[in-house]
Amino acid sequence: MIDRRWLPLNALRAFEAAGRHLSFTAAANALSVSQSAISRHVIALEALLGTPLFDRRPNQFALTEAGAALLPVVRKSFDRMELALNDIVHERGGRTRLLRVQMPTSFAHLLAVPILRSFRAEYPEIVLDIESPHAVGHAPRDADAAVIYARPQISDQVANLLWMERLTPLCHPDVAPAAVDLASFLADRELLHVKLDGEPRHRMWQMLVGEAGLRLDVERGLVFDTSALAAQYALSGAGVALLDRRLFEAEIAAGRLVAPFERNLESGYGYYITLHSEDLADPAIARFREWMLRRFALAEQPRSNVSPIRPSPPTPAVDSRSSRN
Image (cartoon, rainbow, N blue to C red; front, side, top):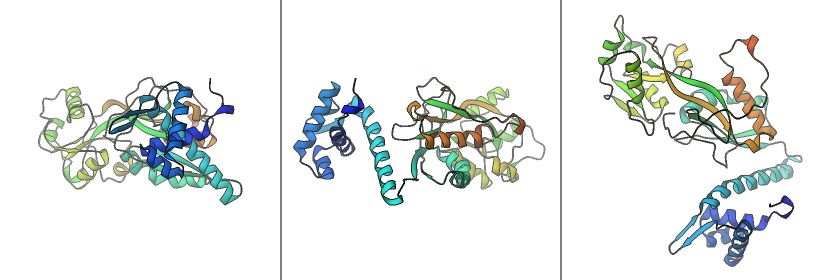
């Protein structure tokens, strides 16, 4: 087993640079050393691990499966060390800590960003670097934590459910009917769809009308990449979108979006806060996880039932291939 007393730091630094640039030459330039030095360090690391980290073919230089697994871990470790050292130099004690957090676009825009000021007020020593990739699955190795939109499934990550999605037909008040049944309402209006990778674009609408016992053409209408875009179109006064009530609670409370019919669909998807098990002992990551659970997972419980958040075993979570959020 490799012990930290003999960690090959120079070899890991050479590997990280080569993996980041996918070039020994570029890595050598970045570290101001010779190309042969980079090559020797990487070869030594591969010998130590007993497996190649790069696929070296004519006109092709790529990470192997082992290299792809190792690179984000090494990069994350070096980033943390660099940040901590710079904090000590510049702040004489190193109070600031940077957390890389990934969130679905709609979740970040509608719920997280508006309340992050309260997190900063509570934990001024933690700086958040928020990313919103189009599709968020398990937190990548170089992210400290991630909010994912997913179906439940066993995972090797620590995951806590924030809430399960409940979809409701929502529209602008001007589009809402005076006294019409659900079937007639949907048949006469444009349906707004949100992409869900691996599923037909009309999948959620199909499930809703099926549970309601209706026979309707649900393949018509517009398709959007995110829930926020579909909601924005509905807010313009056109169409009906099948949206998560929790995600759009502010628009519903303000009357900008209304639910003409109390018909809900349990989609089977939910929002989870996930992190890597080895990061549970990191105080900054633990504080962010606890804060997210306080703000979202317990938000709908009566105050008398709210108890302190304690570390819990992994909750089922899943890779999300969806661009829905």
